[in-house]
Length: 207
Image (cartoon, rainbow, N blue to C red):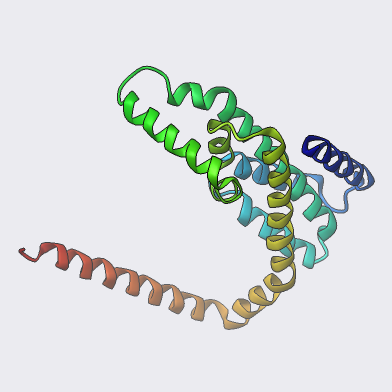
């Protein structure tokens, strides 16, 4: 059964964490990574990726251990995904379908989402926050397996890429010095400003 497979995966995960409970590096760094990864996978946008990248670069600088960084990121992401899914399943659907303004539109949106998750569960789960999968009542066995796979790919993909490439990028930027960094910032700001002006002029044109 798929539930049994998911349970075995969590057991293996627990053993791995137990083997690495003596962390190499400041524990607060791992706690911060876990909090950011868990929050990101629970549905809070933003914190997971930059903190994972920073931790991997620190590991490349021998301040943390890359294996432990990947394990902590994976465990926290997987747990965060489960928490977000449970929040959506227990309270999210009730809130979205509750009586009140625009209830008919909300019900139609939920029905449409249910249809999408039923037809394309893998794509829908991987491309939406965990709580959305919970709102649309994705089956436990399907969600647990895909959540584990997604968390593993996320942690290993971003973590290893930052571990191998990040220090080189940082050294490259450092070699340019402060003046070049300022010039690049001015160039970017100029391009953005020119684009804003262009769009405002287009909107101001009659017809």
